Image 1 (cartoon, rainbow, N blue to C red):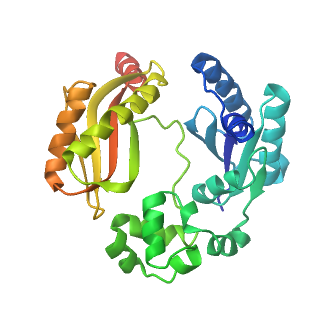
Image 2 (cartoon, rainbow, N blue to C red):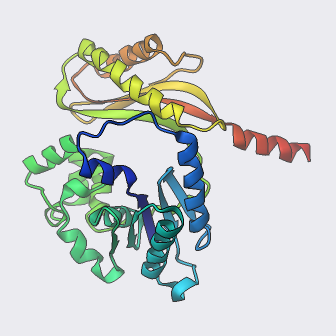
Image 3 (spheres, rainbow, N blue to C red):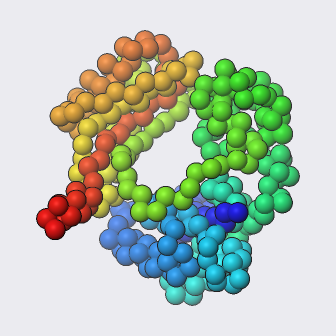
Length: 304
């Protein structure tokens, strides 16, 4: 039986809750990275199976941890107490048998909360869960589910896997599993980014190419912010565009040697739109990454 903990720092969440009109100033990424390393040092006292999601968020697989007689709940509580005591930062944690449920649990009692879903509680918990809480269900998909009478996972379970696949494509099969609390994804240790991207689902479908092109600069500005947060072990590779059309078909287009500027992404978007030539509900922009750290490790190995 797997024991997964999802840990998430509360700093930004708590600040926005206390002050919705908070003015966000330029971040001090070097300081944040240093604190993140200290937090991960605490994690490693309990397990080496750590999957970082961001500077302040991670999955921990503590299935083989011997601390506290293997109690994932007590391990999560100990981690929270140590981070608060040593770094004066509050964190929220969720404990569950898989990553999907651990993530939901960590959000359940934010900020500074600990929520546990035991294996015996999974079925009852998931049955009452709103489908809007499911990973990958955004506003538009949630509305589409609502139009066919699905508000909770209990209602979602009334649909067969083939029926959901016909309605939502491959994501329908994922919905079928999540509605039953099933998530077989393992905690990915030392996982390295393959790309960085930003995507947005629009409340109303964009009717034509011009409407899509108008949204591009804002998306690229957000992408640039995420690129700036990467460390020096990555090099930018191929830019890419992802489009999801109104009928849930989608396409992704990338081009080696293209620049990481507005004209290059405009050209990619134009070519990607031509593949469907129909209203667009989602635009994603991103760039593939070259892992310089992995390359250096390979060079060292070959040199030996």
